[in-house]
Image (cartoon, rainbow, N blue to C red; front, side, top):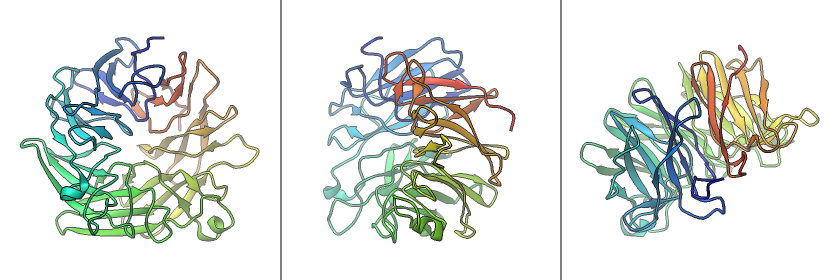
Length: 378
């Protein structure tokens, strides 16, 4: 095991069709948990693994990239780091789609929140609208001079211009860790926060850029220990860093806790906030079910794919599939002891009928792994 190979990947993979490469991030660099993270590339066959950049955490570089991977605009992959940069509050970086040309200096340094309320410490990456990226920070923003509860921001890649477009205030969400999605109409964003809202266990929200209108679509209300309130409220809690997926007028997402068994849920709702429904409560006792989904869903036709961090027959997590109408739930893989991968905390992607993803631990070295899985026919 190489001590400088990258370790502890917390996100997902990005496929670049022009180069045929998968790209990803690790949050640390060495098997001892030292180092500040890497950008890597690998071919879908498993060949050609290469470190493209090792983060240094200096004032001119970021450190500790977290959830999701990177967003492709043209021939450049854009991403964020949680910390590092001039103020150690995180950064926006770019790298070419062949792994060359890492941005130095950084494209943007998140400043000290108290100074200008811009937002800081982003956990995830972006959704792109043309050449403009939209993302969220977990802290900062305008809240009476306090640290702030996070922001929605835009970043124009043609001019490297950063703009704060909304500040969370706690009541409408707090500390977003996930990624936005953009409605096909091109004006409305949807997202989630893991805390805040009426019960302080997270919200689903929309933000209409054309009207500059933010709206809480759903307040999660289920306590983390599950029943009995969860059954009565048909609810979940704490969508830790997941991203919604959209199919026509319906949204689908995951919560890490709550639900009938307190181990997370898969839910659906309409884009106007109506018709909220739990399709799956994870952690059914005695069934070796998956527990605590931390990531996002993948939608392929009418089939949803996702992962749970824990559960399964060995307690190392699972990959599952379910139909969008809530039928056909099936654990299609249960992660086994090493050298198998273990404990995924983000989504899978689909290439040529094969699912690809990463796990935080497991593998031959115990520091995480990249896996491929051919799913059964839906």
